[in-house]
Length: 606
Image 1: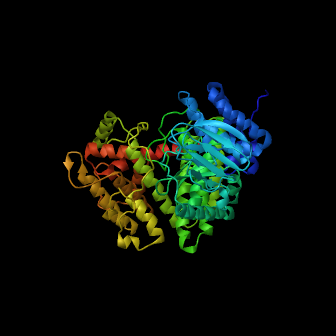
Image 2 (image 1 turned 180 degrees about the vertical axis):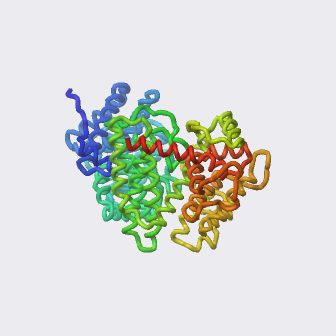
Image 3 (image 1 turned 90 degrees about the horizontal axis):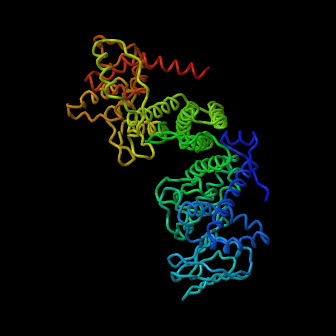
């Protein structure tokens, strides 16, 4: 048998790297995934004689109805089942039998095949599920008119075309019930593959409202994101309802499916679909092209995560957020006027964060030549989109939000050797110049999960669209986050001098061995950094309350801010060791930090 190989031409590779990919490009990815499924089934067949009847039936379907057989092969959860089956001890192959029976029923082939029930049910992937059977063997009989599942005591008869519920039968609600080319699967036993709990079968009213949102989301994507719509058509076939709010996921094993929360918000659903479809495309590409070395240590900052990430995860996240960035880039021009400013800040924020992540990837040393070209394509799109960045204030707030996230992450996940801290503290006390900075060391200090914004970041976002927020001083809308402080309120009001003084005071009062009520957190340090930078841009930059600092001189608040943003872990540890003013410590470190940044920029240009 000749070997079938798959490859992408340079133009298709470049199209994917840019964040898109046309119908022809996606057809190549689908073909690669179909071959992968064939290899998985071949491996199952070699290990399990019980799979032969199902494969034989699927072969009959391929002869008489090849499109139906191909659709069965591309059923998203087939990849989940086959991969899991091969990783574990050889087990039951009833899932494959049910898949073949569903395909044969669609093709109206006469057949008879035995299958073992699971908890009294038989799954027909992509078609429906029989239930209420005894926990034993069942026999499936298919005719051109009906599908009959005979258990030990119960018989379930389902008339063609199997799309309506009847006693003992749950029908899969099909894409024909929406205007989108993808349907909702709330039945497949292997749909729980996205890292989130799946919803049980949706009630008819819930399904109806969800399908309405899907139809509107698809219309939105077609109208405003035609390049994404072209790629999705024929590749995205299935949505799996997930429990939770504003959650979504994709799986490398389930090409063709996206897990998504049940929502009635079509605009947000469109965003989630674009985001997750990026993951799906990249996963299929990675099955064909090696973009990175084997997974290295989890040491990299992904702006959307609380924990450090390895390069493969950072690459996935960066490519997915390229889609998020593109969504908001267009949304700022198409949203109703009341939402335009929100879209602008989201675009500016995600453009900044995705750009930073792409730079991290490019400098990681873990990408292959193809991976460097791919990330280069991502960066080219981001560079082209700079012309869509709007008002200056939105850009400044986006920078604040991005750096607030950076400081918080660095404080949580960077570690500094305490002996180095003590030596640097001694030099600081002696009035000596700052020595060469120690290398950055990363050690996960946060549980895995999404990054949470600081209270200041929440207020900044809200204030862009609702200036009265600063006067009302509301609590953050996200459970588990602390209340905004007086420093946060001062910052949002534009009183950066008062904000920096308040942040600094909280840090000064909250030292080891001095258990006052300072309450300083990573958020406090981030706020101090941002307020100092704003001070440095607004006036001479002399921070309030710091007319002199003994042996140490701060040339500007902006210099101290740079040190606090780039090396906050050093500023914090030396401050704790010396009980000095944190701004003085930041100012002492600043010349070294800025010198290293210039050297790094020079290396990048060369």
